[in-house]
Image (cartoon, rainbow, N blue to C red; front, side, top):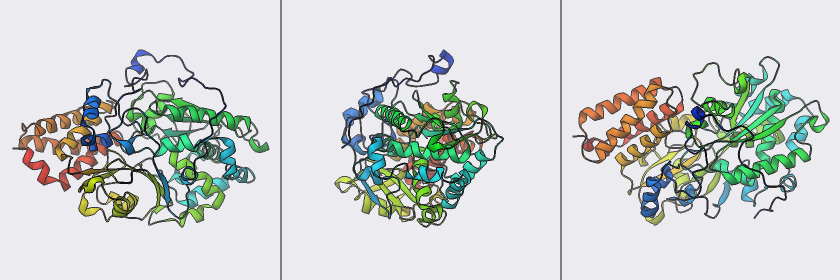
Length: 502
């Protein structure tokens, strides 16, 4: 499908000294222990009945391995499966169009499909015009929080003069999500062009792509593409003949879900122990190396070249309500048609499940669906007519999240799912705040006892209290997301939960 790059192979380790012991001890996979291992993520949990032997193997591994970007073929081991189907079900293939057409891994392929035209257009104008286009587009972050991108960009651009950074959060680790993986592997220059445009708009001269260790091909493809862009003059000094310089570097993670949280991610790049930091100050004011920093996820940045080319107003005509544009979704292996799909905001969850995903395999009955990872609210079957939108899903305790769609069928025990999610939450907690550090492990313990028939109504009340503490006192979305998940389960599945507590 792709031409093989002729650029030299490089070592995927970062060009830094070995991690000091107190930093290395934070990470689960600092030496690449994930290679060839089975995945223990939630999409694989949902599909464990399809290959019980592999799931047993996954649970016996140490260290644990979560989310290899193979959710379309779960339960999975390594990255050995064929690439998933990719289709566009929106008026424009803004994010997945090139991949659906066969991919554009090389500079030549990307430019043949119009690549870097947006950057040429931007450099012929002013940074303010790029900022204004992003603001007019009403683009919101696609990494989970849904924060207005234009507002974040403007905040960085208006800081005091001096060094600023752009960081792509490519630490995609939400169960069911493999969107960023394929954007980086099959359309890397779209991310690079989006980052250069961001640097131009906010006045940054250096960018970092924080890529997961679990995505080795993405790491290599990005490095090759950056080298191509540098040779072509899209990176370096006086880009496009203007007084604008921008450099880009790939930083490979060491295995940690919480490094997807922006303050943790930035500390990881700095070589510090990547515990979550309290905010304010926000990274837009004091981020990487204590300088103003723009952090967006991969999909958010890939939208930017289209917005600059076609105009923010044109982009804002897509979607509905306060959710504008399109959204890439990745469907797990329980669907008849798992794969990567781009849809316009406003389609219903039912449409995604039944029309795009083709319903569940083997005629299975839907028990619930998560969109955006395990630390977000579960959508029960009676609410699947809810539109795909930030506010609309939040109103039912769910969310757009990262866009990984994980369906569960009647093979899933809801109490066992709660134990699984909180086991993941406790394992991946950075330990900085007490509710997440202690509370998540205690909820895991309570539900492990419940599954074994050894839990009381007092335990259930303790669980409810812990969920409130997680929601109100956690430092970041890891703890609050676990609370949202638990709240939705307690709210929508009482007939499965309450009988487990005597």
